[in-house]
Length: 551
Image 1 (tube, rainbow, N blue to C red):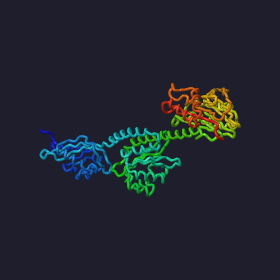
Image 2: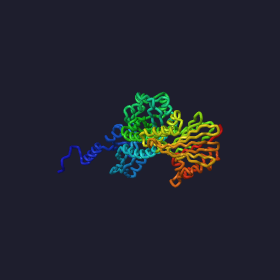
Image 3: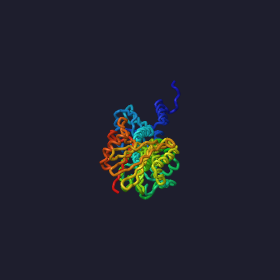
Image 4: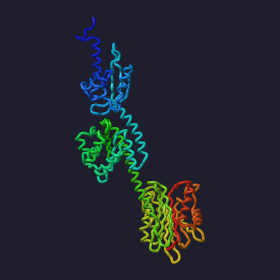
């Protein structure tokens, strides 16, 4: 005899019962539909995935799950089922009951009746939203990071960040920064709607956010962690978000839906926040997005911080560079003065070349110097050298004595860059000429071009090297038609080593250009250095020429 069976069951019924239990207990969403697309079964996992109960789903056309931009897709699937085709890992999108769009992988198989043939389709659905977001996120992060590193301009970097996020990550992307006054603003907005973006930037300018308030950005900055607002349309959230009536109208027009906000933190300092907003779509942010958006915020913060530091360095360098020389030679009655100052470096790579012209009641002081090394330390020493000379010139009347004082100042320094070469020229009016006194401290010699030919005035030892360094002085007259040329080693050492020249070459060229106007003379000397460089100069260059002129 056959084994006893439960009363009222057959072998076929038992198989169907077991199959129904398997479908009911599986973690995958399983449903079935007839060839017209009407849902005929719906397991608990489908309820969890889509948010609809079996009672809500069974009997409805499957299109209630299909996004509007996929309207023809279901008919194509049914046509393939009617042809007996099985669809494996068919990736598409579906809409959950709460309006959230999901990435779904479908396996669709024909249901065949023994007598009637294919009567419907079974569908197994798996949520691959997190997986697809992760894939898109990695691709986006690679591309975005490459673009973020393309510029060190703060404004351009901020604009790149928000523009890269649209539309891959959000319909709106907003950068809000902590201002110096403690409020939140100076915002940059990226969106496919330029007018809406400009309007939001204006709203933030007119109404900066209170860091103590309930706005999502303020909350995130206080908590210093990413947060998600799944529904921006709720009255409670709108009360926190809306800044003004103008802002309310903008929100209603653009149809804000959902937001994710992450702090921008670099080197432990909070710079501001980045907000990602979905608007006018069925997309929603949820907790699964926080890891990606937090990572993007970290990279954005690093790029912004690098740009900010670079701009601060640029401002410091510009201030230092201005300190290395006056904007143009000051007017000294009875003298013509022409200067060429070519700064080779950019940013903090500025060099230590310095010059100054200080008028006095009876003439002027002229200094040309060069501090060893480059960068902010060398520039700082150069500035100190120039301004110390100006201060000491009020108390000391002899160039050699003044350079000795500067030597003592550098000997007290603690930097490896506290060494400098210098020429210090003192010119005083006489009845028919100018009396000159020049002190030299290891600098390329000055060239005195007179009717007798060029004469070199130099010698001495570098300042800051040792106490009581020898500082020779040269005295004489500067007559009408004569010229003194002072230069830094950027002129002598222009170009590759084989193009370098000595002071004799400077003296010879200066004498050959002696009949030119002073500005023409210095420009011709500059062009010689450029020619030897074979292109842009590779070091700072100072050329200063002075000759008696009309009183």
